[in-house]
Image 1 (cartoon, rainbow, N blue to C red):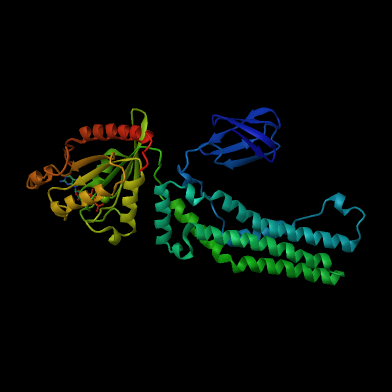
Image 2: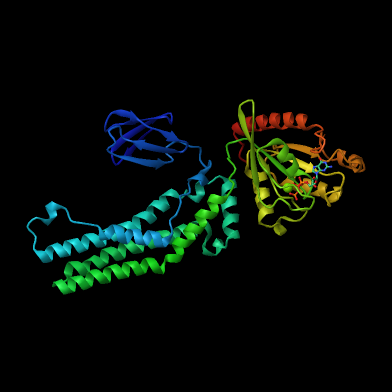
Length: 411
Ligand SMILES: Nc1nc2c(ncn2[C@@H]2O[C@H](COP(=O)(O)OP(=O)(O)OP(=O)(O)O)[C@@H](O)[C@H]2O)c(=O)[nH]1
Ligand SMILES: [Mg+2]
């Protein structure tokens, strides 16, 4: 496509080349979802975000910008404005007082712009919430809730505050410049200049908190291990301590902790692996207790969201030995509850029976077999059936991807 920039029009061919219509030269380079551009004669360079037709809702969280500390922002604005000078043409033929007035106006305007424009840039870089993938959307809500930002209206509320601050700075900055314009003598002008700077600075300081909240939000969202919503995903789910993390360790680059007590895994862990040149991701989730949706804590709700929204294959892991501390009956109930929650019946689902090396494994096997379809018995300890399981989930992800391409019929 072609985009209008401050240097004219630029064309991107298949996300690879940019033709700059200013110099008529193809120029550099692109990373995914982001194009950096340099005019061939280096007269200008810059960056756009999201120039491609990316599928609506794909991996938008990766675009969240780095926010500088409010004090750094303020001191930079003060520094830049103190350096603002008039150009020679403007200076020509002006009296001393007139020059002083124009310089003051220029400095004030630079200060206002430095404050407001940075906020504006941040706002533009944060993806709109409505454009997020449903999984990312839930991830954002739950994350912001866990750091107390839901009190401030969550994602949109925090951005709204910044928008208000930006508007306030612009309106006040322009209003304050009238004082400088109307001052009658040098003394009055100096006073108006000082007053204007102080009150603009005070507006920023009074709203310091909202910039800090923006920074807090950006940091929290940067820390997230975000699932790549376009990559086929295998999700390990099940009750606590059944051996989910042990399986993720076997197959992928994820390094979850494996311990003999429940709730070792406290966050969603993403691991990756490749097979015949294709990349897959594997998600380890914390154990789910057999309890109602309303009683679930944040991380359990996130697990459910991952199950619901990611283009995934579920490896539902059951520990028949009851070594995990949850009875087989409870694990079965949990399985039923989770399956029922899925809006799509074509969900790829594999029942995995873990710890098959232990003797107790066979005690409850018959009970389970009545309920599950074609379960596979595996042991992370002895390696039993690990290869066949891998074949099965790779096959299932391929089918899941094919299913996803077919449009989902609307009710
Ligand atoms: N004998 C045997 N023990 C296993 C096997 N897989 C896991 N375990 C043990 O079971 C315990 C729990 O394993 P994890 O992989 O941490 O279980 P988890 O489901 O991730 O647990 P949470 O993260 O707490 O939900 C550990 O002590 C493992 O050593 C297996 O195949 N055979
Ligand atoms: Mg675990």
